[in-house]
Length: 375
Image (cartoon, rainbow, N blue to C red; front, side, top):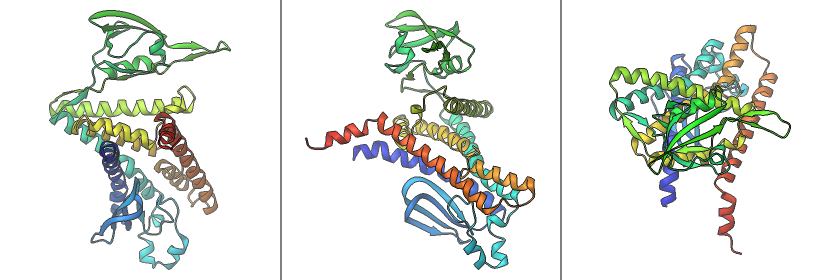
């Protein structure tokens, strides 16, 4: 029971909030374009409870808390990617005009973009409120964890080290470390740390040479911050400016990180699935409301950005398909759409399986299960 309260409940809260925000964006813009929304669901599978609003939309909370969807009139599935031809034939002309698929490509692009846009707006507004009321989370540059197989451990960094300087630049926050690693402008890091009231200088190379003498850049030191955070309150004007700059920096970091994964500059086993998200939600919940809200902000930006990727079944893929239809002046053949969206669905499923496998290995689930079995 304690494990459920510690891990499962924060995960449910996190997923429910950011998915609600995302789907609300689709819902709100769909209604602005006079599209009839049949169901607004949080979760998948059997309905736990729900209600109908005045316009006939069913609002439901479902059994499997792993996402959500907005189903519109005439949709073939929860992604709203394709139309259900059998349903469309049974609709009157007036009803048919209320389907998403009867709208112009530009209107469909707006509906698809509504989810990511809502995630971004939520993140920025939540940041402003957090910075004004409680303060911006500040992570001190104290190392809380060192990966034994990482480059940091190899060159002398230890847990509880306080990082004072990197390449003669003072370090105030843990976040200040990242640009030195990711920018590609530094071949070595000359780091000054405080350890046991003593100042220690360390040198960490950011390049490595493989057996074929090919030089590779190191993008990860293998350290994590200490869990403790402090908060810096801000006036409204500064909070707004800081929220936008923080939002942009987070977006850039996420995109760069994903590109490094795609190009092989970073290991794929860094990717995490639902177990990793649940663990991070649990850790953030231990920091109180501010910690949980900050993690929601981070995840909301992640969800918005990932959905903008031009992969069919994701919002970005639907925007791309509608943009192509807009340019060529006619609908893309139904067979082509089914093939493209089927391929996109396969990619997403493969990624989910891969990240789930990473989670099982990272949290040693198989070893835990084996320990439960009688010898």
